[in-house]
Image 1 (cartoon, helix red, strand yellow):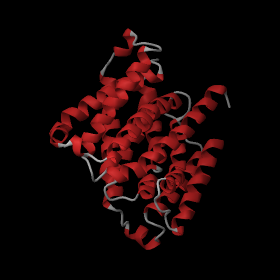
Image 2 (cartoon, rainbow, N blue to C red):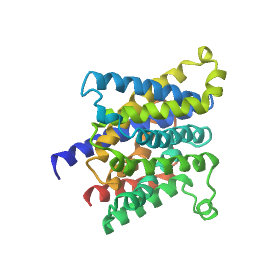
Image 3 (cartoon, one colour):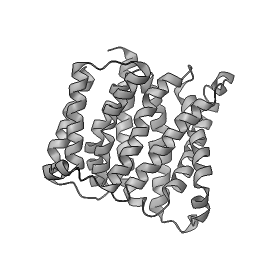
Image 4 (tube, rainbow, N blue to C red):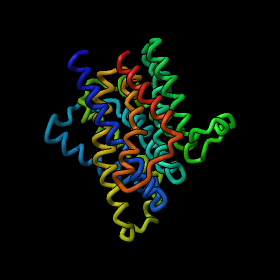
Length: 292
């Protein structure tokens, strides 16, 4: 493994920890404020933070503004993912939603092959199948009868569509990046996504009584903007330029287990023992993917 690949793996490990924190927090505020309104502020705050970091670091080169449609495409996919995540968390338990997120490596590998012709070895295929089976076990609460009926909850179904957008996003980063530093490219993506979200969700933004929101909404906004958006966008961009799409998204298999830790830390309960085999399967899938 090269030093560049090692840095990519470390970036994705931190990515998994930060992303996991957004699930229990998102579930706490999903029914308190409009997902479109919250995520518009989230994107604006994250884009502003990254803009300050860019200006104090590499700066905005003229080449960074070439083909601005690239930022629109990626920003739109990012916005779809985050809005549908919060919509799904209105009814989906955090661990089940995190399990849905672990289906993205399968979809990402498919789009990686379609867009970049990234090949999938037998080991990666086995790991993706194992991880997908583990995710389905958790999503259907360890109930084989529910799986056979495909009794998918409404929240999980909504979030699954968002995860499809996220899976397309990962290989597109490598396809559309023209040598811009990860932080510069991420800032453009978040700015474009925030503008599109603001235009689409303006009625909900204007109708929200922001002064009356409880502290947990502002805590969730700051965390998701700084850590689960600005930081993870840079980490994902950084890793996607150094690792194949399937390996980048392999770290999503850690998320359900980390979500449980987050829930316990925030005073929530742990899921039932029936979901443990599914979580174990996703952990084994991660091991296979990283060894591939």
